[in-house]
Length: 205
Image (cartoon, rainbow, N blue to C red; front, side, top):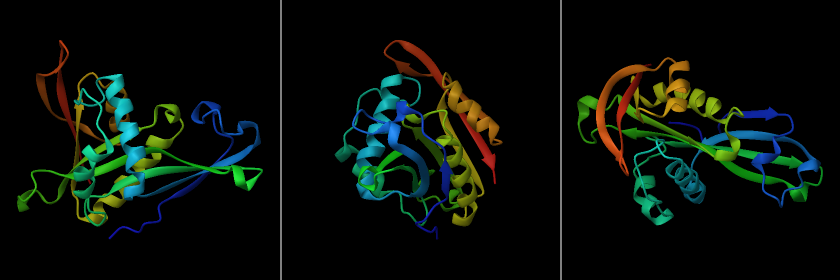
């Protein structure tokens, strides 16, 4: 079982691009990043971040935006005790406590592979997405490191990721954490006439 409370990290002043115009940027003292198991109240933010990836192409094979209701079944399939979704929640701490702001800046999920087949219960698919305004700020790093620590506690011995073979950013971060190429499905994805394949990157825990 995974505790609801995740890792808590403290950083200096955040980059202004991560906040909207209503946030008093100049009065921000610091921000705290808490990694926790997602709840249904986080689904709106999870969906928003996923739709950003759809807009940018090659980060997911979906071509059309999804809605929160579209994602509810997917969310319910992720038991927090076996296939959790972890979210990074940044709390921006202002000089005036009334101006404190919580923002979901990324998420990472563990999903079942071929559900119901007991011989495959020790393997899970890892997926991760970071809010476009919070990339290159350590969010992905902390989410992946946290997930890699938690996965063995959930009984997983192998993790794999499916990636569009043009998604160099995600491929590079997985390589950094010891994932290697386990397979390639060539020219199976059609992005409105742009043909590409999928890589399978895996790691033994």
